[in-house]
Image (cartoon, rainbow, N blue to C red; front, top):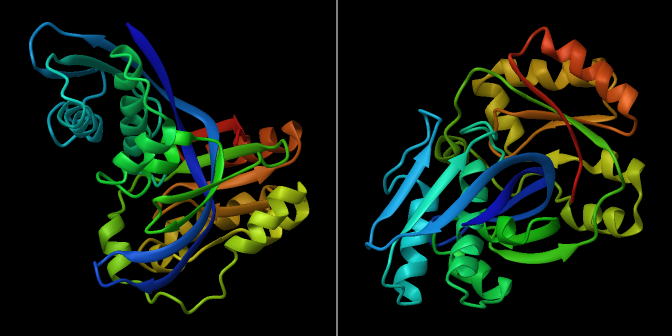
Length: 281
């Protein structure tokens, strides 16, 4: 049996630069992991099956699950002749803009590598994982990184300064595809390179000032409750607040724990899924 932790991520920046010929958007984004984790365990089987077990009724246990697809890809690529049982203990909200599915897939690439003692470097796993999804290479490494291309080209960065994050997910589901299709890329000044510099310098105030997500203005038009949540976070004392990914989850960053507690208690009244966690990176 082998265990892996799959942390959620938040976007500190998400710049959409232009629509590519392959249909994807060229992006530049700084992402960092937070202390909200799924836990996965991996066990070899004697047959050739991939079996996903979970207590969460909303997590698919078939090919629709990215962890299943990751296991399948590993088995094909590295000629593994037996199967695996993957148990997913789910804590990251689903369809939330926190890359929960991608984090589980990334943990699966690492987990299969470990139980079959393949000895594959993370760089190779990250490259392979890009075949399944743009957020997965970042999740293979974890930590903090600048991601470019369609999100699969990773430049690792130091951790941001210590801080607290309050995450809140409204009771709506947002389709990433729908948000991207309504987007006009390239109309906002990119912030990712400046954010990269602020993180390298450990400049907390600049990190807060540079928070930017091009998808936010598209999502808030369709879902005004997301905008209200961002405003509530700021009004409750978060140093900075923004939507993560394509939403609908909103996060507020606080330097001090006392401040985070205050924001958490204020937001808990208007949103059922609220988490107060450490910024990891």
